Image (cartoon, rainbow, N blue to C red; front, top):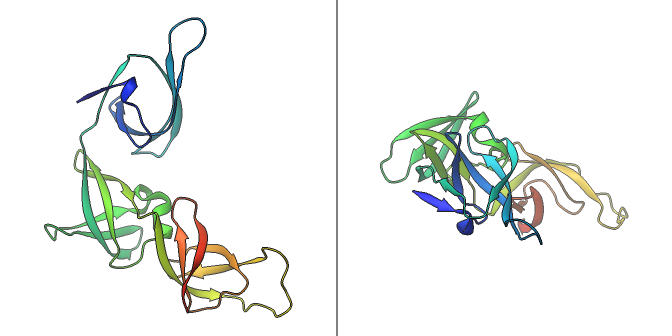
Length: 188
């Protein structure tokens, strides 16, 4: 399949030099002189490299055949993460290097979307928000109420992030997977 520059949008997957990319940002530019063009920032789905690329208006690009499957995260073994296809129950493992920052938010039995290109897992799409339990953090000190004061907390996935002083161990918090930031306390 082929897409013209007029069809570019955030999240569109395109094929350049036989490598799948996803459009992270784009801007249609119409200068006073000369032809219009599209400035894009694209991220490789294989290596994670980010490139700035400019296309002339009307250029066409090929769309990669990326297959997306619902997978359930099972467990981690060494540097490999094991997943099960929710439709066929086939199990596969994905190297940590292919998952990027997603490893910070994975917890057992979580269902995510894995992208495959030419039969190989190349990326993961997480929900925008996940709820994870705080397993280690310092107790909040009474009277220490500076504006927006934070402390580090270790979550059940092993990820460490800054949280408000009032949070304690054992509480479940909501995290934005796009920014990696604390959103709110879900339960005690």
